[in-house]
Each structure stands twice: as structure tokens, then as C-alpha cells.
Length: 458
Ligand code: NAP
Image 1 (cartoon, rainbow, N blue to C red):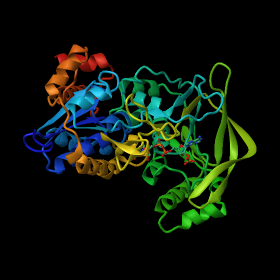
Image 2: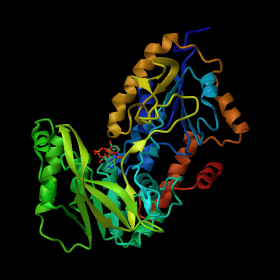
Image 3: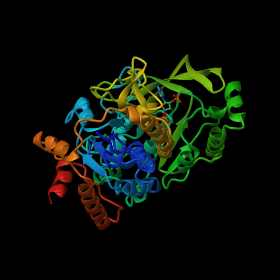
Image 4: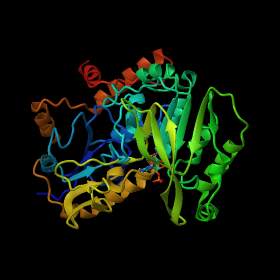
């Protein structure tokens, strides 16, 4: 028997999840110049994870990263196994029989909960649902959002919250040339939302959105940002955070927020009100959302470790729609240890551990490894770290008994799974682009499984 990682016996790696961390892991493996075969699995029939289903349609530049992913997919010894859900169509233990190493890059698909009464009322949605809906994600394609009221509240102040705010604020004219799903464009065209509250539980210095995204809220066609100058008054600890020479992030945000606060009243048809130090305590309504009760917060703790404490003073914001944008959470896969508290696969430098010891051959990268933080580029060094661990372990990894991906493809076929290959995806891609051209958009996505499979059949 040859050692794994030689030309006679290339290392066989399954990567589960075809978002940025999965592709960057593949890239790191190819760069290592070890003979390797990579099969990239995704439960969806299309690759790219959040680049396709999460990045906002009006941020096309960010999506150009898929050109790099295409180049990675063009490597010899790369196969895409789309439309295959690991843990459902094939168990993790089965997969391990076909691969020397399984690297999970399956992201954080669930949401953190607010844990306040009324969270599940009709009209209260997670940002994930809305983002998936306007991005044509098959899971969320049929969600309905009642855009007939005038006021929407967004809880949370990360970049996802800003994306949601911007999409609600933009005119059809600002969105029509993007790859936004047609069903969403039509619904947003009829939206009556005029006032959007973007509410954070901590202060302006602690807000997580980045300055580029914040600045965009000040340059919309028909929506004006509104900031109450009183909200920008800082306590001593926040002031110390702000003045820290390395805290360019908050300094830029504060200067943009101050500029917003100084703007004269606008007669723009829509307003986006950015509010701070208000924590949601209840979502109220009888049949559906009617208001959100916020408690005014004060900050406690040391600079850079400030948390929000309720002051007991509450205020109620009447609204017809609530988006909870308080962060994602990883999901368990049967057969892999899961850290319930953090929503990640427990790991040390990407080696998945159980009872403190690494499980040979199981790895994690991206959000399922470190939690839902950072931008797309953050995943590159993160995946490289995991691949480094994998390659260090390689000499000791027992070679998997079944070394033929075709055999696995046949097994999946017997189970009624229609594996979508990269060539299939390229056909889908071409059709989506052609459909988009007719409407003056970069692409018109397919949004239903049967439509993807129909293109594959053709
Ligand atoms: P995030 O950046 O972690 O923001 C989550 C927000 O929810 C924070 O404001 C947080 O406040 C708040 N929050 C959490 N629990 C809460 C609670 N119980 N009550 C009230 N507020 C609560 O998460 P995200 O916006 O989902 O973004 C995820 C990652 O994707 C981030 O790294 C983001 O930068 C990235 N992303 C980037 C882009 C882009 O580059 N354009 C676009 C979208 C997403 P605290 O700070 O007080 O915890």
C-alpha cells in the first residue's frame, strides 16, 4: 500500500460546504503541491454559499470573488457534488470511508434567537429569511413579508442589518439592475415601508457595521438617514474606546454618524433612523406584530468589554414588521461533535475535537469553526490554518478504504440523489446570465430545486 499524498495514492479530501471557506480550503490544498483529489459537497445544487445567497444584490463587486472560485474548481482532481446533503443523503461515517479527511466548511445556517416574548409573531422575521428571499435562495423563496405597513424595525447593528435596511430603503430604480430575485423586486416595488428603525443595544462606538456600509445609508435616492445627536453622546468608557489609536473602525463610523446627525431635516420619502442603547424586551401584537418594546440601556464594564444593562426605562416603537438581525449560528450535523453554546464544531486550529482530543480526519473551517464573524477574505487564512493542520496530520491518517468518487456517485444515484456537477452548475450559470440579460440584470437566478434540475436534464 502506498502512503497517502503520493502520486500513486493522492490524498482524498471531502469538503462539505462550497462557500468561501470551502473554496479557500481547496485552494490551500492545491497550493501545498501534495497530490490531492477534492470533492466539494453542497446541499444546494449551486455553489458559493453566502456569496450567492447572502451578499446583497447591490454589492456586485464582492461577488466577483467567484471568478477565483471558478479557477479553483478548474483544477485537475476537483469535483462538485451539488445537491448532496451530508448527514441526510450520506452519513458522515459513510463519507469517511471514501475520504482520508473530511473538512467541514458548512457555515452558520441558523440564527441566534432574541429570547424575548413575541419573537415568533407573524411579521417578526429573521434577517436570514429576508436576505435569502431577496437573493433567491430556494429555502426562502416562498417566504412572504407583509410590506404594507409604514414602519419596520431592524434589531441589531451588524452589516446584515445594514443590508436589510438598504434593501428596504432603495427604490426599484436602484435595484432593478442588480441580481435581486424578480419576486423580491416586485414585492419591494409595492412596499409601503417609509420609516426604518435600525436599533442597537449598545452605543455608536460599539456598533458592528463597517463604515463603508454605513456611508451607503447616507447616499440613497429616496431615503434619508436620521440620527439624534443625543444618541451620539458618549460615556467615559466609550470615549476611551473611541480614542484608542487602533480603533479606526469606530472613529470612521462616528464621523459618519455625526455627519448624519448634522444634516438638516430632509423631505425624502423614506427615513432610516439609526438608534442606539436600546435593547428589545418584547415584540407585541395580537394577531401580528404591532410594536416593539425597547428598554433604554446603559453600558457597563471596561473599554472594549462593555455590555448593555437595562435602565428600566422603556419605550415602544409602533411597527408592522420586525427583522431580527442578531447574528447567525452553526447547525449540528449527525456524527460530528457540536458545541451547543457557541454553535460551532469544537476544534483546535481546525482539528475537530471530542473530549479534548482531535478526531483523526475531521476538520472545520470558516464560520462552523470560529463562529459567524469577519468578511469573505477572513476565511482565506482561516481555511489555510485548517489545511496546515490537515497536512501535518496526513502521515498519520489511516487511508480510507474506498478511493473511488465514481462509486460514491453511484451510491448516491441509487439513493435517488441527483448529483449536480460543476459542469451542470456552469450550464445553470449560463442560463441565469442569459435570463438576466433579457431583463437588463447581471443574472436572473433560478430559485426552485426543480428548475435547477431541469437545466441539468437539458
Ligand atoms: P454581527 O456583525 O455579529 O452583528 C450582530 C448584531 O446583533 C450586533 O449589533 C449585536 O450587538 C446584535 N445583537 C446580538 N444579540 C442581540 C440581542 N440579544 N439583542 C439585541 N441585539 C443583539 O452579525 P451580522 O450582521 O449577522 O454579520 C455576520 C458577519 O458577516 C459579520 O462579520 C459581518 O461583518 C459580515 N457581513 C459583512 C458584509 C459586508 O462586508 N458587506 C455584509 C453582511 C455581513 P452587540 O454588538 O451588542 O453584540
